Figure (cartoon, rainbow, N blue to C red):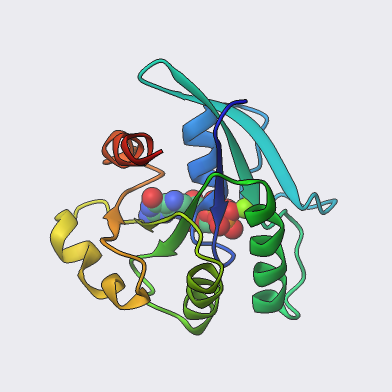
Length: 162
Ligand code: GDP
Ligand code: MG
C-alpha cells in the first residue's frame, strides 16, 4: 500500500494550500470557498519516484464554534489512517493554544510527526523554526506552501524516515 501522509493543524495555517502543492491538483480545496463540509480530502503526491497519499483534514465551510475541538477530532481520524503526520503551524502567528493541544494529542499517541512551520517565506529556516521546538515534536521544518519553499527538503526527511 502507498504511504499515507496526513496534514493536521488549526484552521488557516495552510493545510489545503500544502495539499494542493503536494498533489498539484486543481480541484483541491482552496480557502474561502463557501459550501459543504467535507471533512477530509485525499490526493496523490510523488517524491523522488515514490508515490504517496496525502490527506487534508479540516474540511471547508467550518463554523467558528469549537474549532479546536474539531481539529482534535480531525487529528484523531487522520491518525487512524496515516503513516506519518505533518502538523502544520503558522510562522506568523506563532504557537497558539490550538497548536499545543494538537501537539499534545500527537505526542500522547506516539504518532510519527513532522512539524511544518508554514508561511515562512523570506525567513531563514533556523529563525522561522526556532520557537516551534517548544511543541516537543522534534526539529521543526520551515516551509512556504504558497511559494513552494523547502517542501522538497521536508519530503526528503519524511521519506528517509519512513
Ligand atoms: P487551512 O485552513 O489550514 O486549510 O489553510 P488554507 O490552505 O486554506 O490557507 C489559509 C490562508 O493562508 C490562505 O489565505 C492562504 O493563501 C494562506 N497561506 C497558505 N500558505 C501560505 C504560505 O506559505 N504563505 C503565506 N503568506 N500564506 C499562506
Ligand atoms: Mg483547509
